[in-house]
Length: 103
Image 1 (cartoon, rainbow, N blue to C red):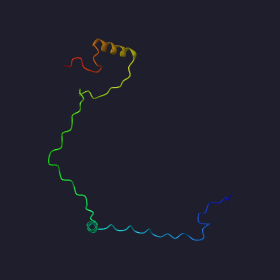
Image 2: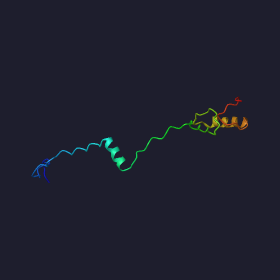
Image 3: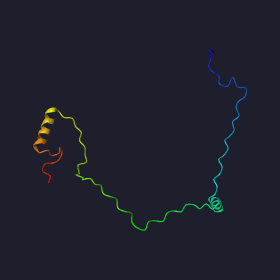
Image 4: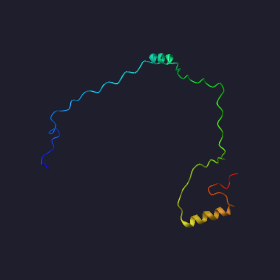
C-alpha cells in the first residue's frame, strides 16, 4: 500500500483527446414533408368538423343529497357515548347527526 495521495494520471502515458460532439441534424422543413407525403399518397389527418348539435346533458347522480358533507371523527368517553346511544334509541332510531326538528 502506498502512504501518499493517489495521483490519477500517473499511470497514463498520454492524456485522452476530447472531441466536441457532432451537432444534431436540422429538422426538415414542413413544405418538404408535405411534398414527400403527397408523393407517397399519405394524406395528413384533418381536424374533425365541429358538432352541429349541442352535446348531450350529463346524467344526474342518483344519490339523495342532504347537504351534510362533513365527516366528524371523534373519541368519546364511555359516559357521553352511552348518553348518545340512549338519545338515539329515544328518538326511535333516528340517524345520529340528523336534526330532530328538520321537516
